[in-house]
Image 1 (cartoon, rainbow, N blue to C red):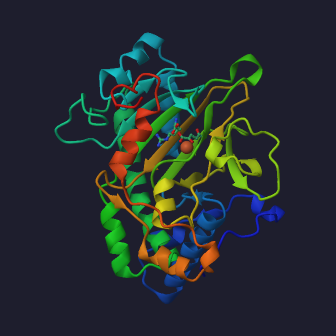
Image 2: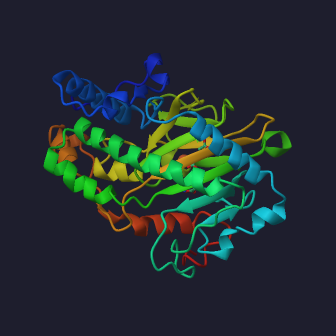
Length: 361
Ligand SMILES: N=C(N)NCCCC[C@H](N)C(=O)O
Ligand SMILES: O=C(O)CCC(=O)C(=O)O
Ligand SMILES: [Fe+2]
């Protein structure tokens, strides 16, 4: 079952896979059910090896009315007068939790053409002078908080469901899964509500520059706007037509494909922690947002991340797979990191306003 990156010059692989999570929701231990779960786990494994980006059909898991309502509430917030939104500025708290004005986010050193509202896992003994340790700032839009908190609960549970299936797909034993589970069972999750006006001056710049997500699994619910989210698929020998959005480390040959919303599905991609856990077998995929349409786009990514204190290092199951490869193809062993420390560095680089607070030069 263990495969390496497949030949992605095949045109069929330009289409991101769609994986139905329904078999993972069934508690029935009947052999048939087990087999369906196994197939789903294998599909996740292949999607992670070949793309790092895929759709999860969650129609059996959430009532579509839920996320539609989140979208409506998000739009209502972004539609408020600037002074109202500014009451929730991240500078009131820990320079992470709260509202960020248009172009306050930075990616690859350039301002992103979006505004956003970020929430993190609440912490005990909150202290707004400590990076990431402040309090969430909820808008006064009626029912906003309760509806979004419901979504957080649903997405946290979904995170564990998908993680367990991925553990199976990677060939982990029950004990190995328990060990991994203990690193993600108190997820230091992040939820963003992002508002994207059209790009100014004939589509200058990026709505969000090319990046990898930081943690484990991103679950993205977006409005139906097409051609906004783009995913980079490396393809040796195929020169990109548009290199401008790429950071240097990812400046390899390949193509950008769009990941347009599909009804009943969320877009899912894996973050850098999966890259470390699998020692590079699963690549965290570069993506960016280039919103050239004339509407105001809203997206709601939920980042299911490891626990703040999780020590993330290559998993034995990934090292077993690595041992099967010819020596010359083996990736060097990744260094362990503590997720929370890694996150602090990332967030410190994220805003024009936060660098001093996070001791970034
Ligand atoms: N996990 C989060 N918050 N993801 C948002 C990533 C957007 C890229 C970011 N400005 C960067 O430069 O890394
Ligand atoms: O808005 C989107 O479609 C993606 C946003 C994103 O990649 C992020 O916030 O990390
Ligand atoms: Fe992202």
